[in-house]
Each structure stands twice: as structure tokens, then as C-alpha cells.
Length: 252
Length: 306
Image (spheres, rainbow over the protein chains, first blue to last red):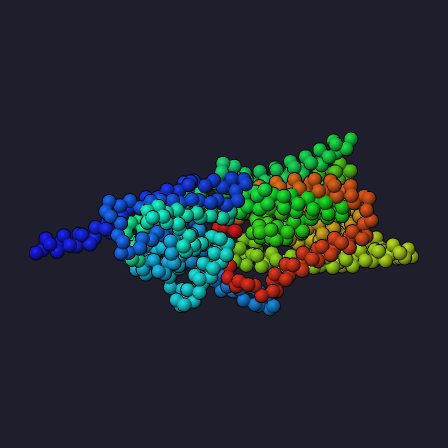
């Protein structure tokens, strides 16, 4: 009897294990060059299955791209003596510098709460507040504000229904990295879901790096600030003096 | 064409930058003003973080004043003694300004401080310029105007540590020029300006220097203080953006050359009114942003970034 139960269990479990997700990106590196205006990334993939397609439940895909996390401070303005001043602040231990979620349907419908908690998919869960300061509801207001402000800047994006799925097998979506993104390793995660549960996950990376000149300038500015200052002065003196010398030459 | 600014970590339109540099350069060529007090706020408006705008603005001041100071040195219209005293004050002031700037950055209030200082100073300069040019216009219509006395001695000049300034023909205490220089240094560090708009009137009315050395001496002080402040910003908070500076400077030097030529052909009084109105408009815009209820009460700062 025991082996029959085991077999039944296996059989019900099979379709879950039987589907795998494979995905690719149009580019695995983004270079912040002189004329960088933002970048569009195409994410595409396929579902591989060795068993027949289950017909009773729907297949869904969620794609999340997350930029390198950074500590941030969220400020609230209040009117003081007529002018708007930053008065209160909340430290956030780590918040992704960029976060985009695209899915085949509304997150609330295709993703169960515990799966969301395990995999930290919705943006609220990707933000780690500093513990122990203020009461929880006040902290939540600041976290919401962080998401709202970053969403307005195009840094946090939610695109429900933007993942295009064909014949329950092929899917693709396009996400835009805005011009204000920071450098670092971006994680792209692809989740395959059925009945609100994650049945397979695929992870890949995008390297965002400043191009040679920009990289060099930033490194110089932070590692050799004295030399960088001299460079800034040298350029100012060169162009300031050079231009007037040139105009004098043109005039005579 | 967008251009990526590696320190500001955003991109802005290259032609907008050249336009800002060129437009302000033209004004500075026409009126002999430095223009730093217009460049920095215009950079805020196009989305450059205030800290980067200030540090890069002061770098641009070096470029816009260097050829002037060289010309004045050649013509010997620089009071080097007075210039050095003003400079010592300026360096001290710049250090104080940088310290204050970095402190306010840590407290998350630097944007407010920069904006407030701009509202106050642009309001004062714009108002004075408007008043002055209206008066000049009236005087041009009424030639029987009184002439001002060359210079007077106040109690200020009789403080201890008197020093002889040969080129200016003055024998006054070193404290007034030190304090004036210091004030200008503080402004350079906090506002990213050269400070000529404060220095020139202070030298004429407060120190009583002869007008022929005023411009050269102020340029001398401004160039060195701006250079020092650029270095200090680069070293203490890494907010100088070279890419941004190069575009502003190229626009600025070309604009200044055009402005100088245009300025010779136009009537100055009416233009001066326009300049003062422009300054007041920029002041009004910044004041409006501070006073108007914002649509978003929250903002984000990332420690170590702008």
C-alpha cells in the first residue's frame, strides 16, 4: 500500500517538476557611454516540458530585474516658516537601485503571498528597512514613499500583463533601464508559476558598467581626488585661456 | 544628443549644456559679470544634483576668469598686495564654506541651503542691478547729476594691523579686506560662484579702492579662490563633474567672446535692466519651488552619492 501512495504522490508532483524555464537576454552587459540615454532589454525564454501540458491550471511567468542594493535615506518635507524643509527621515538598510517586475497577469492573482515572501518578488519585499526605529506603520509610509518616488523616476517599474506568452511555451518582454541607473551587477530572475506557486526559477545577470572614459574619470575622482581636481583645473585653464588666445589669433 | 555625466550619474542634453554655458557666457561678455550665479541655478533646473552643480560651477568660474586675470596682470591693473590679502581671507572662507557644505550634506539639508542662499543673493543682486540701471537711465536723461566722492575713511579702516597698499594708494587695516575675502570664499564654496558681484562693490564702497584696479584685483582673487574651492570639493566630496564642466566651459568661452563684441554695439542701460530681470526671474523660480506645496513630500538621498 505504501508504494501505491508514493507513486500517486509522485504522479501528482510530476507535472510540477516536469516544467523547466530557460531564458536569455538581448544583452548581458550595458555600457554607460558618453551618449547613454537608457537601454531597452529584451528578455525571452521558453518552457521545457517532458510531460504533456497540464490543462487544468494556467501557466504564468514573472520576470524581475533588480539593480545593486544600496542604503538610502528617505526624507519627508514639512512647511517650516513658510518654506518646505526636510524634517523627518527614515534610514533604509538596503533598497535596490533599480527594480522592474513584469508578469503575464496581475501579481495579486498569479502569485501567492507565501511564494512572494520566499522569493521576494514584489518591490515592497525587496526593500529592507532598518530595524527598530520608529513604529512599523510610520516605517511603512516611508517605504511606500520610496517606491512611489523611484517609480516616478522610472527606477521602479511594475508591468502587469506585459510578458507575452505564446502557446504556454514561449514568452518575451521588454524592459527599459532608464538613464539614471547606477553601475553594478543586475540580477534578472524568471519565475514559472502555477496556482500561485513557483515551479521553476531561472537566474542570470546583467553587468552595467561605465564605458572606458567614464570609468576612468569616476575611478580617478574617488581614488585619486587630488589628481582629479588638478585635471579639472587643468581643463578649465586650458579651455579658458586657449579659447581667448584662439579668438585673438582669429581677430588679428 | 544626450551626454552622460559620470559623477552626476545621469545624462543631459549636450546642446542644452552648451546653450546654458553659451548664454551665460554671452551675458558675462556683455556685462563683465562672472555668470556663476546664473550657471549653477540653471544646472539645477535641468536636473543636475545641486552638489554637483555647485562644485562644477566653481570649476567653470576658473575657466571664465583666467584669460581676464592674465590680461589685467599684463596691463598691471592688479593690486597684488590687496589681492593677496583678499586671497588669504578667501582661502579661509572657502575652507569654512566647504566644511559647512559637507556638514549640511550629511544632514540632508544641502539642497535647501544652496537654494536659500540663491534666493537671498539673486534677490539682492537682481534688485540692486535693477535699481542701479533704472537710476542710470534716469541720469542719462538728466545730465545734472551729482558726482560721488572718491573714497571715505570709516572706523573700519582704522582697525589695528594697518598696511600700505601701494597700487591702490591705501593705508588701511588688513581686517576689512580679509573679512571681505573670507565672505567671498564662503559663497564660492556654498554657491559655486566666483563672488565678483559681492567683491567688486565691496572693494569700491567698503575698501575705497580706485576703480582702475578693482576688476583686475577681484579677478585675481576670484580665480585663485575658485581654483582652491574646486580642489577642495574634488577632494572632500568628489562632486566635480569634469564632463559637465568641459561642456559648460566650451559654451561659456565662445559665448563670452560673442558677448564682448555684441556688448560694444548695444546700449548697455536697457540690457542691464533685462539682465536684472533675468536674475530676478531665476530667483523667483527657486523661491517658488521652496514656497509652493510640493506634489511629493518625500525625497530620497543615497549616502555618498548626489
